[in-house]
Image 1 (cartoon, rainbow, N blue to C red):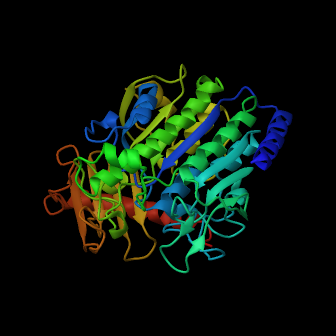
Image 2 (image 1 turned 120 degrees about the vertical axis):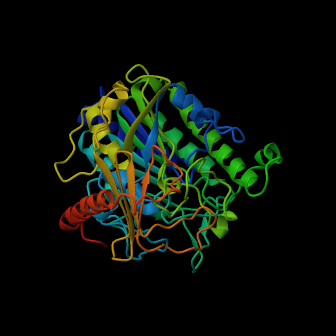
Length: 453
């Protein structure tokens, strides 16, 4: 661990040389497979998330916040770039094996590059899943420091990936494989992040903190299994793993407080998409509340996710916003809040600064579009006001073994948030208008699309 202190210490010197100490620090936390309504502040009664609830109490929670994709890699790419997955060149999951193709193109400008260019020290700690080649791993995308696993998931104790052969060990620091078998991955994450924060406490930093939780394999501590023993299977396993994640986030935030950095730090939280109903997750455990769908689905349960932002004394505390927003919005929002220039390029994200400060501000989006892939057989969706149109929708509410359905479905979310009453036959004009709008957006992405790797 001495090497970590030496490396992060060198980053402090570099950031001080670049002279940006007055700007706020930033921590972006992206959870993995966190169900749409599985937080205390959204009213869940059988799972406690006290640290996320406390963070919401010190900030603004976003009640209609969407991920940009219902699966891991494209959702994370959108957070990183401010661009929809179809536009930034990664519409499906990246590789989970070394040197395999598929990942975020090197031409994309990430949050890390934006902040590093502005004099920030940058670190990625946790799950990456945006490419497993030298030119797609974190250090190639603007991160000064990187620790974590590169593929989609790992066993938290051995740090091996077991889900599509061959089984491989997947734990890296700055692109070099390291070994820490027997130590729980999220504990390693908090240790690494704490050292980074300590080293950077006098200079501006951007920390991307991405727990591999509550993604399968569910591996909660015995105390949490006991705590939730009264819940049915697999809810109790999911709840225990989510509680573990909340506890680790609490430790990270406690470190901020110990370093007296909370008032100088913007903290953002979101899930990458909805909960999993895959066999490896025992076909469920998470909850989408009133919504239909789960991970892989463009129904609300797959893409409407927990999200919040906290910056004490700078944005309201204990506030809620109902304006529509999504993961692409964080890059332009942070550019605004931190006074850090973003590169001029076509962007699907919009700054949320106005709505954070005022509940009456208009949503920056007239519509949101999703493409669940890039071919003619891909699922897609568009939300325009209260209307939502889905093409080839896939309902993964019960499990992920079904198939997309042909045709389109039209819903009015103000009247039917569960997306049960298809109105496409009753309002064909609205469906046709929205489909044309989506196709125009899709064509604009294709024209600007980064080359796939």
